[in-house]
Length: 304
Image (cartoon, rainbow, N blue to C red; front, side, top):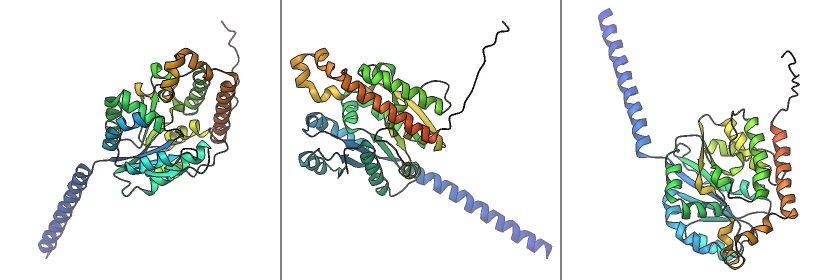
């Protein structure tokens, strides 16, 4: 009798082992057969459709890199743009206002609704004009960046020093402060490009970020990356050359007519400084809502 039960128990254990091995390899096979795909989630403001020709040249790689194309156009970006994008396979929605936070949240919500398999789909957010510029100038870099970092829950893509320094001084001098504050809030040993507004994330992270209460129009540029980074289990930071200043792409005629230096002056006026300082204010205000500031008094050591 003992031998009979021993044999039966041994057989059951063997069967369970075979089942576990089968499940393991089936799960592994499914991952191999169903690679991670990336959904594009982007916002676009181009009322005069000045980027049409550059967009056309970028479309083949856009369609190759992304499984689904979701874009939110600002209310002043008209039907001409929306119809073109729809014809090219984009899911186009119109933003509820000109407030950046409203349009970002809307396009992320739409992208979340288009996820069918959270295990095999992730969302990539980037401003559409920056995406167009990146693809037209550094196509190999964006391909390598996306395909080589698909394994993380959160990928934050910043600007190299060279790319950052192509931006006007009004942006550089204010954004560096946001980057320093955001990096300190994360406890990082060195400053990273927090304010680049370009990231890859999972459905779980996306669902959490759109529930966050925002108090300003643009402060989320700084706080979303901080929140993403804190919540993500596996995260990574990379820097790219393709995130150089993309705005000149829209004004090639004006630049050719007046010269780059003269054209650039409009981004160095007191009005522009005021705009950028407001961005900085918004970021600090939003950051103060999620970070506990503590008072540390360090006395000078006079023993030496």
